[in-house]
Image 1 (tube, chains in turn purple, green):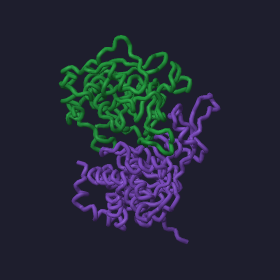
Image 2 (cartoon, rainbow over the protein chains, first blue to last red):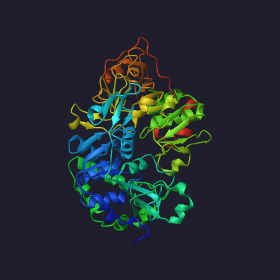
Image 3 (cartoon, rainbow over the protein chains, first blue to last red):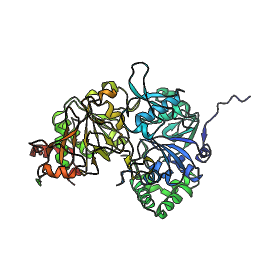
Image 4 (tube, each protein chain N blue to C red):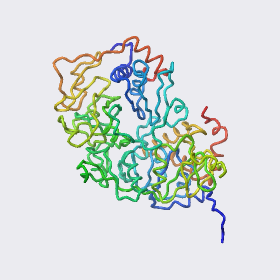
Length: 292
Length: 262
């Protein structure tokens, strides 16, 4: 009988294999872009995606998305709404599960606690229950108040990016886990965490209070794995790269996909591995993204 | 218009005067006027204010100048923070939010202070304009003691009689009990500040009415730029412009990059 503890480090290509057509995928913040790019590279389709901003837009642009659990698709770089989300939503090419931050947390928590719903007050009186019929307005049985029943939001796989992890799935976010990662982790069947750096189990045990996720199902070694987004403690956002994407997406939303397809090929489809991607971005560009 | 100050500067200074010491001021993404207003209030009369930028809570009244925060998740902003409010639940302790103040915008804002970030168009499956989404505004507007609607544009497409969709409930279809009858605890929108004027809300109908016009703007111009039937009182005051002192503070201690001057 094998008595050796199982190590959970896999590479990003193997991790991409965990994600199949039609799954529900939750994407944390910082954004685990090495895994997002693998999803695009593998041509995964019909995903339900819990995400916001330009990583969501990129997945829509690549044709991976059928449904969006959406609370915010704000853009920046001159685009108040990210271009491909806007186009796909207006044309009815994606289904939007309209929600907001509190409802998202309630739905993820309901899944984590195996409940049929959790109540939420924010959005009482709004159009959210009308445009999202899964949200049910009800009268609570204790005090008779008007509330919204939020059904479980249950990801098949949650993908996250964090600072450190050991080989056994113990994860540390640098400076705390942010507002959404732990909700996504608790709700999901399986969680894959990309880490900037793998650390020893001894280092984890030296300060167990610092462990933010106790049992990630897989760990992927991915320095600069959140690029072009920020990675707290490691590098800032690559605004030039994001602007290039935003402009290409805007042209595509206007009908000319050439620049967008070029972007997707160059940065998502052609590099087979995360290392190939980083080589394409270039060491000088990456090192210029220092925080201080 | 007085050429000494820009309209965003006037709006920021006006808004700063509405904020009281001891309050918790929550500012979200893409809100340069509220961001400047809360930092101005903090420096001039609010040493015990808590500023919460995207979940990052800070008190920076001791600083001579403050660099504009970029994004809350940027560690260079967190250096000023005393805590990150989102490590547990973004909307914890909402029971205590009566002294919290929030600022909101909208693709549409209607006569009863309801706001819409969802989109424009009668068919939700085929919107003419798909908005960015509600972010956290449904919950924030439910629980904060009061909030301010701050608009970058004043035209009949933004200020409408009835929003196509409501993402943050203001006063519904009106009435003094509009929020109470749904059990919504927060106080609702207090003022709506636009580049032309300030609106407040009638106590009984909860409908917007003209409270003041910015220098150089007439009530008639506001009426023409507003998409809902507007109540104009007999005497409409002028929004008090920034004083020289206020403008100096704003430009030398808050808006160092001159974002509001452009």
